Image 1: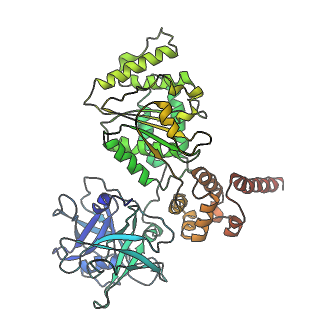
Image 2: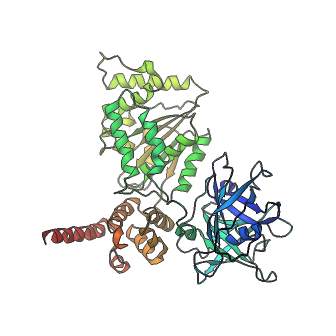
Image 3: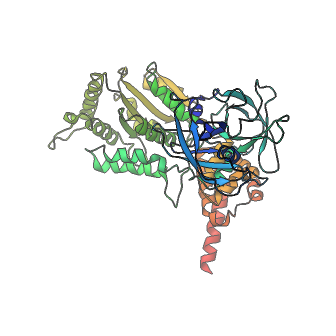
Length: 521
């Protein structure tokens, strides 16, 4: 299914001189930074294209696809790599003098081999400088400096002067693949090349993605909730902290943008307000939900959220414990549902209060509610299948549950029947090859260099049984332990192993034996 390109179009900018003469395109990275080709900026500022220092002056930029497309702001060069034959060249990082008021969100592609990917871009060749035209094509062969030729022979428009600096996007994933670098040495022979997004990362100009930092909004939210159950809240905080990771044990989160967007789309509609997220054990359901909740909290502050992770490991799977936490979540918003200090409520008492809470929600039609329960398959004796949730959801309430497949089954269909609630099911697949590369990149330097080695990424993809998130987590931990050696795991070693937990354990055991032997000496 083709990706939604609207968010990407909002990041496209036109670059002009202060005299408002158009010179090329660029891409917003966030509300205050943009990237483009260095030669575009040099032209706009009146410098030689090959200068090796940061040029003075300011360029004008505007967003042709934004609502206020005529509004311009100035920007100056923050980082500079002049045009040249070397791998990292012809890139400029711009700092906006006036940050944008609305957020900009783009997703960089970390695909190792880009050849054959279909792309789309918008450029401004002669006659189209103001209203950009769309360019479609596919990525052709790689050339010596790590760039790629662009094939647009079947497009309505060619890559011509005025297209340089234009970001191009993978039509299928919606991820940014890099910048167009249009060679303008001979205008009769226009040629377009791609500066891959991986080159942007290698400049060191940008902080690497930090999966743990993305969960900070959820951590902050937790500190202000479950106020009736401080001890139990700690268990939920520990649950979230595990998926956030720590500097000594990073926990990458990669390759799930499409499913985050599907969850966004589900929440934005009212036709089907119940959704079951299902997948095999270790498929990454909890991580996906936590990262989605963190961004929902940031993006929709007026949405009322109730959250319950059911986990044997974090001691929230017991029926009484789960009912207490659901009740405490409701009491955050309806304080009069709380029991008095002298009460000793049992399971039935908590059930009664929960249904009082569901009725309160239904009686507030103007307020939107979201209840997320993760891991219903871990509930002791499947207590959640009993009289806990309403069979008919109020119109102002969305309910999202997650569960691993039942033994012997390949999807979550039977969970829907057992719950007795009409809704939809979203199946979570394994990770892609590019997600494996992205996860490695999130480890930072020097390990991120491994993501550029296609053979290494392919072998790791094979060893994770074609993208099993749990196996990936284990292998990432093993690679992290060898980060100083960048790393000691060699491609030849990986090629000799089979994709399984046993293969991972074999490597791990040998490392432990080696460490033990070194300590003895």
